[in-house]
Length: 565
Image (tube, rainbow, N blue to C red; front, side, top):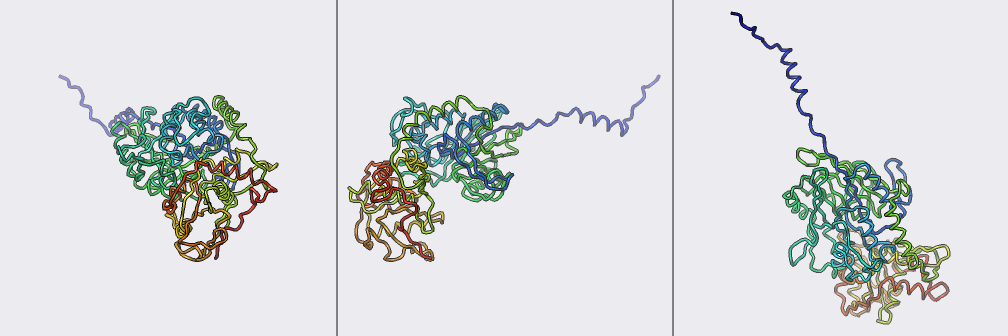
């Protein structure tokens, strides 16, 4: 009987066998790339505007025209050829504080334009609350019912609202305890469920009209975001992106890869977020950056549509989680990509419909520009001009002193070479449709109001602009609360009397204690005149043209505030 030979495996044969098994093992699945484009603080800049920047590539300051919905649309059209699943998202202040081309129509053209661009989600910003909660909800849902704004459906006979969703995890209705808007939204992209969680700075009540947000609570940003995350996870989300209207600043260029010097509120918020959140898209500080901080990537795309943040999320297909984030901030250059005819045509329509109103001449002025920039004492030529205008408009109500906040002045007052100011140029200065409120304040309250200019949570001064009827000195060497020089305050040339009552005018934002001036809330006998600050400004320019007793646009501030060093 013969037996088959017994085969004894050799080291070589085992090695070859194992190598064969290894060769047949499945390769790791490729990462899934999800592409986002982010936009923040658009502020209704339908047209390209001046962008002053320093690029990481060039290392020097440059100036160019950038942004505009036509150029944004062209860029996005090109990006979507590369990836049809690309998502456009925002980080608030898409409207509010806008140029006349948008604000004269209640910002409806901006909402329509952003919808045409394919905006999917955005956090709310503080400026979304400029006209109150009802107007914000109208912009989201549509309709022509007037709210605080009187401009509803003036551009077109109907308005269907935003095609994108505003998100706000930390804005809560005090009655219901529920978010005013959805806390998050989930989008399935390439088989991955991505949750976008929105939030706005918790200090929003200090920068918007109190009456417009009555009944709303603005809670801690990080706490609200972390609370929303498990709810989104329960609905199947595996990747998480924060859209937050709160920011920071860095000295690094807007396109510096992985910058590391970011400082500001958003960093502290990011450090407290759930580790599953790898990307924070921010706004509010109007700064371009793409940084690593708090264990995650934090981005911002400057403002006004000048810059877009192009973001690539690399997703692990096994877990659906984010394993890497790459950001590239790019300037939006006119003519860089083929036009999107639909959006370019819409811009042309808005400009044509607006041209006559914006070009309407209102007055001859003394020189081409009155600037917002303050001198060392804290005076601004433009601020004084507006303060004088609001006093003149309410003089019949006995007003003696006028105040203007710098944040209410949106741009310099610039006119053409012929020195003829147009309505559009004036409207660019005062786009918020604030009304003038007259009130009684004691001399002691006025003194406290002035000291409040340095007693700020931010640690920075915030100087009120004053009418020519008001004068005072402040001492830079004194501590906060003691800066105003005793006995220096004058009203119409007479020393301030702490016990006397004076009639004062300010816009309704300040009158409600906005911009961190709670003393205004102590004023008595308040009357909202319903006179728009813009109408007061335009009327003042018309009545005080060159050759009249008071020039309409002084080249430099007349001395109203003196600083002692």
